[in-house]
Amino acid sequence: MTDDSATQDRIFAALTNSAEHPDVKRVDTHAASVFLEGRRALKIKRAVQFPFLDYSTLAKRKAACEEEMRINRPLAPQIYHRVVAITEEPDGSFKVDGQGRPVEYAVDMSRFDESRTLDHLAKAGALDAALASAAADAIAASHAAAIRAEGEAWVSSIPALIDGNSHGLRAGGHFDAGDIEKLGRASHEAFLRVRPLLAERGGKGFVRRCHGDLHLANIVLIEDRPVLFDAIEFDAQMATVDVVYDLAFTLMDLLHHDQPGAANIVLNRYLAATPTDNLDALSALPLFMSIRAAIRAQVALARLKPPHSDDPGILDQAQRYFDLARMLIHPPAPRLIAVGGLSGTGKTVLAQALAPVVAPPPGAVVLRS
Image 1: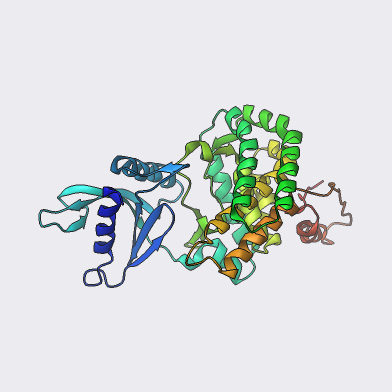
Image 2: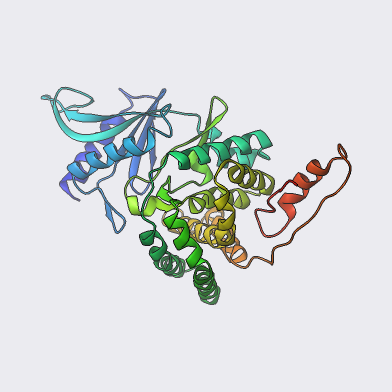
């Protein structure tokens, strides 16, 4: 164990000391530990190093906390407040924002109702049209404010992203190798078809520093408004993508959570609120959603470690994401469906009802004459 890890263990023990913190709840991820107490949440980067992030030193963890604030506070000022030092006092105790020597840093946040994230709401029932529209508006607003970036690096990174998915899925050891190979091959073929379009979109400013991780668990309802949080801060390149690839994560996850109606509303509302050139990106949407589904399958497989090695729920989730990735990469040919009739006969209502069930997912774009 490194010195930083040993110090963190002492800090974590102090923050969960039942005498001083009787109601604290600790939530761990692979890269952070969050301490929930009352209306406050403290998020501490763990002293770890992975191929995609490095929090191994105090200076790097402080910088990561500051970057998390910089990226997320504009999206969620209700949640993100400041970076605070955790200090070691002369008597050896630890204090949050104390007067002693800083030995750790944390993101100081407001705690929210965890049952109000969109993944929990989706599991509880259908997401209504108003919520889906509001989510689309929040995503569109985040993209409008996002900083533009040069697009060549993003487009060039996609083959490696596809190969990384294949490697991770094989390493998971639970899926058929032939199915993984077919998914990878179909993904590369799809990329070659849309590469000129993606390069053109990069030149037009559609590649931006986006949220990067817009699955449903990272969107929460606060005062009945969807709020995006927990955007990627540890790798700017990973989050610098085509805006429709960012949107694709939400659309894919809505499909995974059996919310095709909401997915279709999000798609249509987003397209209506953003430049018409985004219509051209629909040809890349099956590839984008498939890549996102494969990523989520890997994330689920990574959770299949002790004590969850045989958890059927986690494996089922991974399998469903993998199956979704395989389905999305093979979209059927597009169709045009015309709805005619006199004024007031319900043409729009019918079109909106049909749109979610028109293949490929997430359904048809509703056009008006």
